[in-house]
Image (cartoon, rainbow, N blue to C red; front, side):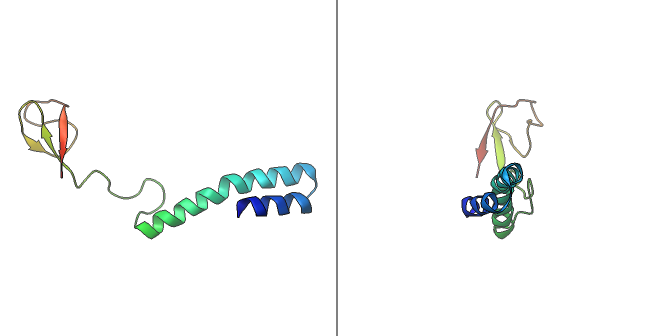
Length: 83
């Protein structure tokens, strides 16, 4: 789709403007499609959504269950995910 649009723009517009418009279509169109797909899945825009909040972790050093990056009991960063 974006290839057809960019070729059409290059045929209509003069040389430097057609090339610039084609490059703009090749960069903007995939971003538009990605944002539309993300909205359909329930995430809002880029970086939206809660990816890591549903996981609990188990510390490999002391076997404590926790949420977050560092074990609150021993301070270790070594962990495994528990679903």
